[in-house]
Image (cartoon, rainbow, N blue to C red; front, side, top):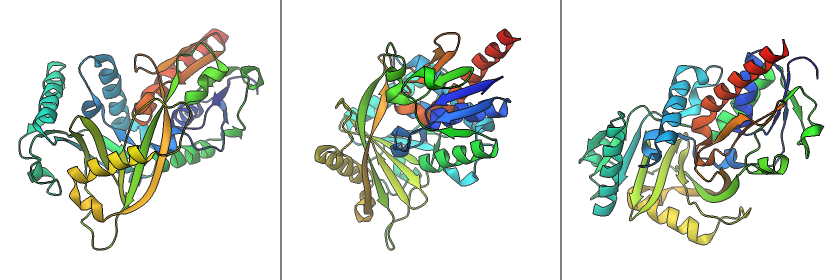
Length: 336
């Protein structure tokens, strides 16, 4: 590959978003990807900077809000409309302590200039909620996407734009391109050992709607259940429930304890889910960094990195693609 050639190492949502943007900008792009299903396969697909926010994470909030704007203002171009499965989040609390936490988040968001709509009648907004759940807030601009459909759609768009597919590489020297972007999540440190990225396990469930059951909710429902967090994300055929979070090396086997907690918490929030089919249990490995912020920058003259997105890979894909595109513009300018 010669000229303005780019090798993207990683075929998840981040690698594909970077590749697509580079293709649109006129680069010759090769994506090195594995057949293994990574974190993008088991993600919830929430684009939720407000409802993910917490005091002390101002920088992540602002990056997330910037990326959410990009989702709304062009990142969906070229993707099927039905990859979006919800347009709003409702965040609710099960007990008084949970309600106090939600108030803390709401006040913090307002202090940042990003107010959300607080409510004490959550069941008027979402009638399927359990009796007794009253307190919460709405985040009207948040979205949810079908994670698997987005990955497939980005892959198809890249193919239409002329991407070349290639197997994974074990060494950066094996990537034949002028510029290389490391975007392979938890495996990034195998190519650049100084990257402080570690795997954090999380179980996710898929519940399938059955005839006679109550309908699928129309918005994302996030809840605090006795201090634990659970999210319920609509899909065309049911609901994605997630997600646990704990350190367990590279183990991707769903654990009974994690699955039980998710089911208990999901049904405590939406009792009707108890009638759905338990269609899938899976676990993924989020690429986490010490400060929770992604690493998106230049490493040397030839190498860039886009990794360490933790639980926000789908949300931050447009922002990451834009940041890498800006660095690639610098690369082209230097080469002239």
